[in-house]
Length: 264
Ligand SMILES: NC(=O)c1ccc[n+]([C@@H]2O[C@H](COP(=O)([O-])OP(=O)(O)OC[C@H]3O[C@@H](n4cnc5c(N)ncnc54)[C@H](O)[C@@H]3O)[C@@H](O)[C@H]2O)c1
Image 1: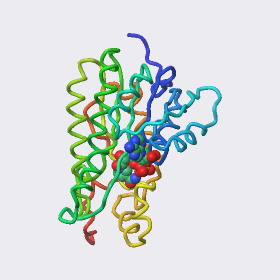
Image 2: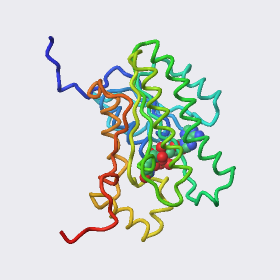
Image 3: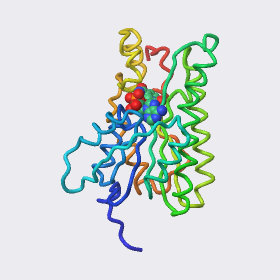
């Protein structure tokens, strides 16, 4: 058997990655990290200016894959289908776009439910159906969706968001089962609490912010850049036998109960 060059285990040279949601937060950092590992990265976002700003970032030079920007509203199914045709042979698809309305279930309106489900679940479904067939035909690909600790652990006010994230995980697992024989891997990354515009409401409330920081084993929030390693890993051959899984990057949030520290 040929020796494996482990120095290149995470390299993505010559591959094309599409990151949907690359204009902000975790998507932005994921795009930059994938490019740093040699992938050409298409930064897709509904906010084209934000995607362009991400694409304009980075050191360039040897080993840098480069970035380009692409305007895409994943709530428009026709646009999603067109994007898969426009972007050609895509090796890695990452999607981070999601929203949350933090309200108790009984206070939720039907419109709010539809808004959260449309972006968090329906758009993911459309992206899988748009990009999956090309990857399956080419016999390779890695699809990475963004779940959340809320897929497995909840609190009041997270009902619909949590349901979409748990639903997304099962959708991704089933897609992993269906596309596995074609050489396409499908996984989820589940962040804990990350400092991005999505959590600005929490950051704006000192008690809420502190409570969330102290819930994780590491005692702090995460930076969006701390999710990028999981994305590079799942995109690369370092994870060539990893599919249908959910990788928690939550600072230990889901490992510990956290209600009480006994005097042991
Ligand atoms: N931030 C956290 O604490 C946290 C925690 C757990 C899970 N997550 C998950 O991680 C993922 C990324 O979150 P984030 O905090 O980086 O979010 P963010 O709000 O910072 O970024 C989301 C990006 O998606 C884009 N977007 C929104 N609607 C879109 C649409 N219709 N079409 C295309 N692009 C659209 C936005 O323009 C933005 O650039 C989400 O799936 C989120 O649920 C985040």
